[in-house]
Length: 125
Image (cartoon, rainbow, N blue to C red; front, side, top):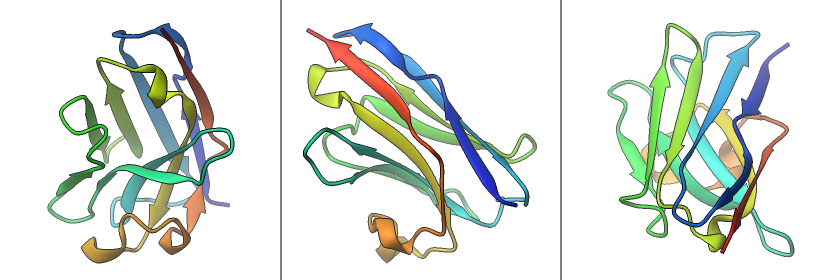
């Protein structure tokens, strides 16, 4: 059974950093696009970042560009999200996702096949 498990969330102050991890099991996700999404209370799930399969092209939401970095370690079947200069508006549940996607669909949650359970990130001002 395919499984994605996020970890690394927590409560931090504005300006701090966190690194989220997403460990995959059940299959090799090396040929999958891996994405991070987040959902704040009362809001829709929104795209944060993605790393495309193959050459590993990186994509970011404008709101996190320059502060967040997505990376993957295929040997460990793990994807990371390094979050720096956190802001209160980054507060949300962060989800890891995997799918056989092309570049034009990476921001679309329904296109992803597998999802983790989420990890809470809270940034206080």
